[in-house]
Length: 97
Image 1 (cartoon, rainbow, N blue to C red):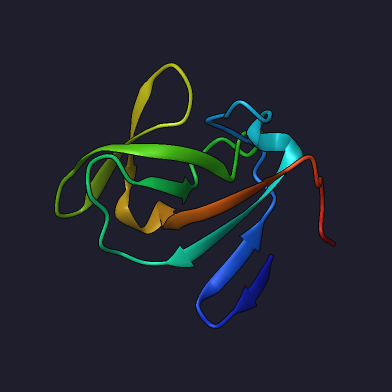
Image 2 (tube, rainbow, N blue to C red):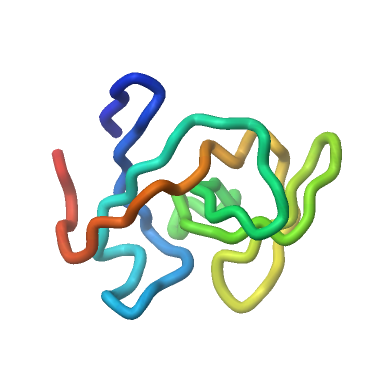
């Protein structure tokens, strides 16, 4: 994970895909942020080491928890497990490090 001015690159292991490929074949750039809203694309930790970190969509927020969808199901995670808002995905890059 590379940190540059509040921006981080990360290699997701799972999550939402796009027409260019799966999340696990990409590098994601995200901004550290705590102000999440419904519909935001985020980088999150689900609690499953085989799937973390994941690219997910916020489906609901509460004061302490956030509901995310990184696959077919919606999961509730602690707000601290959502690391930041997704800015861009670079497909087919694999690992930076």
